[in-house]
Image (cartoon, rainbow, N blue to C red):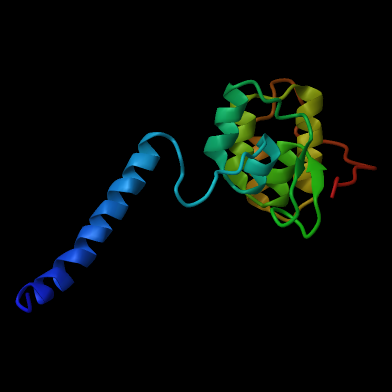
Length: 152
């Protein structure tokens, strides 16, 4: 019996870790997350969290990038806000998300002009370039933004 004790002390922890790992793999295979439940996000929260892939996926599933959605406190600001995905991307200062939104659903003239005013309201040249790259044909590059106020 004394000779088996050291062997058991070495084998048992490894066996327990292997069984635990096998259990985690089985839970993952059936779709249960063993550590935390995924939190659903709307398109504005995805833009605020700098997740361009989720933004594009949600637009592909029919989400409207011009419709405002609530964004939880802490994602953009200390308070919860309701903004469009484009506004969330601009507030997060993420030109690549702005580009993804405007590429997935090219804006009409009026929507582009609002986007240009929004881009001009922040000190970020990359945001202005991303919006400018999606200017519809026949729309002047110079936009009158008198009276425009950011939504946040």
